[in-house]
Length: 426
Ligand SMILES: CC(=O)N[C@H]1[C@@H](OP(=O)(O)OP(=O)(O)OC[C@H]2O[C@@H](n3ccc(=O)[nH]c3=O)[C@H](O)[C@@H]2O)O[C@H](CO)[C@@H](O)[C@@H]1O
Ligand SMILES: C=C(OP(=O)(O)O)C(=O)O
Image (cartoon, rainbow, N blue to C red; front, side):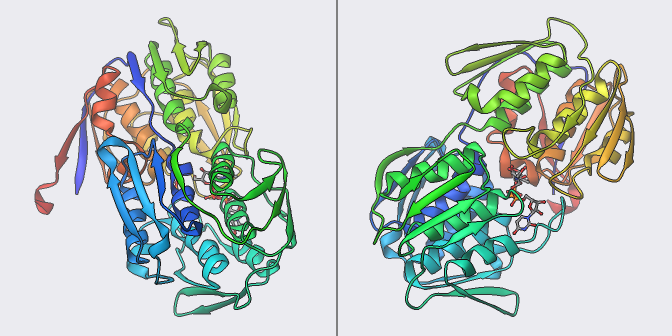
């Protein structure tokens, strides 16, 4: 197993180019199953989750040319001849459930191993399946697999989501674009990543109205084509993470190649914490000008609220900020695994259900800590960079799922982290 060793009391500062969004790229890869011609994707992040998704695509029989070093992937979904995503591939990441809707919409049959729970919570898929049923699919379960069938194709329907779900919105949209007739989908997720999936499908020829609003109206088309150059949106979470790095080391970081409109909730909280935020075109600078950040209360919420994917990073900021704060996680029932690890580093945090209470301290101290999920992991890495002494962050494979070239990018903004391998796994 690999781990990071991090010398403390480093200072973040500098400029960094942000990559494509993992949470847009993954659903777009699965939506690409719907195409019938070559699809060229640019700004694809070089992440392990993308490599797993390429393997799923190849396993379906499609051709994949991945040049991830240059963030470019060519997909040829016209070659798909297998409609099953086996356990060995699906179990590697939650996103694999997104194969089901395009497979049943295009081929009338899809079989995907159920992804199961994960460290941050149970992550059910009932809303994805209910949407497919509404569109006329038959859903069955067999030995850990979910099977969707629609021999005569899907039919347009009215779908109302009780809860806002990014995942279920993507599944419903991917099914409705090839369903016969019109679908109205209400109370959809408005996350920029969902908008990106819709724009991608429109580029393939889908008819979707209301993109970016709470209601989507989709008129099914016979088939979707390809696209010669589709650019994945920038990763707003990667950007927010590096801006928080500046805030906790009381310094200045500029992130380039971002969409500031996607960052409003994070930027508002950073301003409240005392940061000077400046925006110039596609670049954002966070400058603390040597000041200690002030505590900010956080309640995670669907977009345009504060993203659950920023909660661990804001928890770290509050752990080092002046004053007391309250952080409430409303999306996932178990997304506080970074808390006991930050406590080991000297953070003063107490928890009651989905709420934590933080009393900021001047400095954390290095410790051996375990990275339990993607955003928990990065918050521990950032904590280690500014803590006193050495920090050892174990089980870092989560970070490679969501942060491209982490060592190089950290280096660009002034901090060295070193990847090592545990003796027993060499
Ligand atoms: C609304 C929201 O913030 N979504 C986040 C969620 O997306 P992700 O797509 O993983 O999760 P959803 O948006 O679908 O889940 C939102 C809520 O709905 C529940 N649910 C979801 C699907 C379902 O079939 N049944 C059900 O009950 C979930 O348990 C959760 O409480 O995690 C991603 C990775 O951290 C984030 O990038 C997304 O921003
Ligand atoms: C938890 C995350 O991703 P995933 O849904 O891919 O597990 C995340 O992006 O923070």
